Image (cartoon, rainbow, N blue to C red; front, top):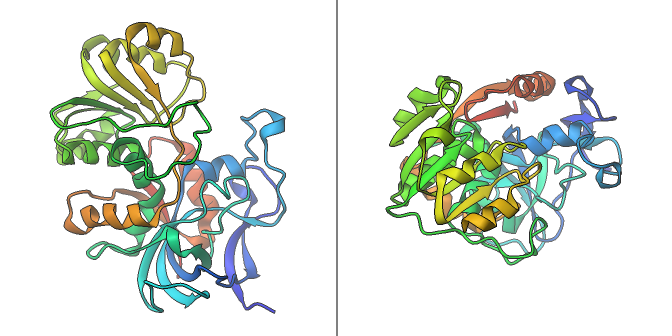
Length: 338
């Protein structure tokens, strides 16, 4: 019988209070996998949607869950054991990963726990110079920004559109980031700046100081000014917010430009975009250890910074989900594991 560990588990769908901190069986590292002793994990929108049972989706798309399940994809920790055939890692290595996503989108990838098994191909050495909490805050949000803006990194079919998403050249271009203070947004701002773009950040006023610190060229507080009324001739808008009003950004983009949608649900402006000569494109983030290794160099050098909104002990995962429900998050919410 497996050894035991602590985990924050679901036995039913519902609000934050359904998360239970309790004993669970410790996973083992199968062939090609690495067992990681988790030091920190972070919250991502799919965690919240799955905890709620994806109630926003049509019933036929909702998960047929097997309880109990463990939420979470993003981890940073230490290699505890290696499965058969694993090379490139050793017991004791500091590592980070986004675990089995989107494969485990509807079942949970097991990150809210003291141990998690991770396919070796999804794992990278933790960047030196940042701690486990910062490293755990990065994977899904950083990979999302990276795969939208820098390199897709895979040839899997796109679940949202018939064509392959392609990043566009950013050097010397004007890039607008909507939702710039959030997890994906604050990485998108920094990657666009790293690539040599002029960046316009849109967020609430509480994020202005951070955005200035990250080097944005212009900040727009959406609570005071409608960006679509003053921005023109952008080459790219990347929207990290979603919703039914995102087509308003089409008027800010020049002909031949692009609108990238991190969350495409609710967008209904495809015909309008086509008439304006604007490419609308979507992709779904996928686990990728090689990309985390590459992007991790930017974290190690301080070229890209990780912003942590707040942190909670794993035992208080329900409180972390309550914080997420309040919104207006700056960066990421982290769970620390003793």
